[in-house]
Length: 154
Length: 304
Ligand SMILES: [Zn+2]
Image 1 (cartoon, chains in turn blue, purple):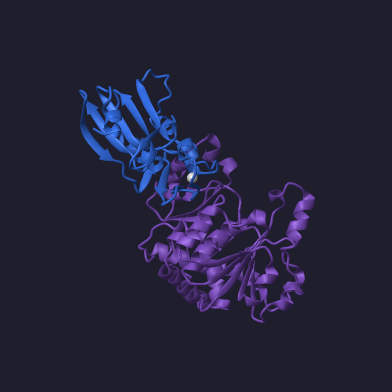
Image 2 (cartoon, protein in one colour):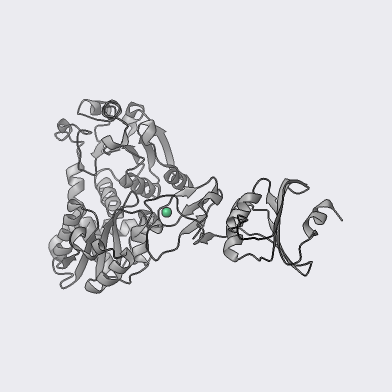
């Protein structure tokens, strides 16, 4: 068993292990999941762990929680190599890589304060995913850095 | 196409643009032929910010097609004042008209509004975003006065905030024009626009000095640099002064250089340019009517 696997399978009964996260992005992954510790979630993270594939990687394990497609979509923007492992009763029952979506809807908040999607209108934010960054489908504003800072929190 | 709404010049293909310009040329040549064409049709005009000129131009266009307009009136007398959402406003007024034209201070407003209505909606400006009918009349003016073959265009002034510039630059890439962007460092094209132009395969260069490119241009499109873009009056005067032209400046240009401006101008084009053969900005403004007639005609007929 490689180090990689050991780290991944340790001590989670039900929940999700997000592996192969770009080194240094673990806290942003938690931000995407809306986890700041105040909700009492049981979370363990490894940061800048040696990895064959990535050199350095982060690993995030969340007990009792599975991810929505929206969350996975945004995750893919900051951690394009991530793998999602769903654990039930200590076993990895599902494992897949994230895929970059064509667009992300309703998850990011447009940083342009003059954009219609930031006002009180019945419209979801909508961002096209570019090779680098994302672009608002309404006002064309591009976000290239710190995408996690623009995650919309209700 | 078929396309119901006209939101951004970006969504218009070269063929779409040419069909509007061709129709505009037909209409300009024989306006009487379409004088009753849309008898009984109503255009709803929703101007959430004042733009008297654009509204007059659309009104004239609709009336010259035999139709009429129904106007929302100023915002301070409408339901918007009471806090109604834009989505609700357009869903109500689409029932009053066969097509809508909308100007709104927020970017993306026209796109959002179009998602809530079934009648065609024309964007007449959304904040710093798009203003496709201005682009169409600019293109019409360029085609009539310089043609699109082997065309070199200089666009000068406020390239950062000027929405007419962004739309025009994008459309010109579909005509394979060489584009030179001339502006102070602080008012260069924004990143999103530059990205799009590169994606579209634009042939473009950026300059801070008009002299570098003036003698190669077929068209010089001048826009206003506004004082509020600068920290203080002195800085504004100093910078803006370098992007003003007069008849003497144009002595270095080709004889058949065409000078355009979306108007209103302040002092970026000196009055002595008006007397030269280069000046085409008043004609450009007049072209708004046949071009908007053409667009309305195609949209109301479902031909775009
Ligand atoms: Zn936006």
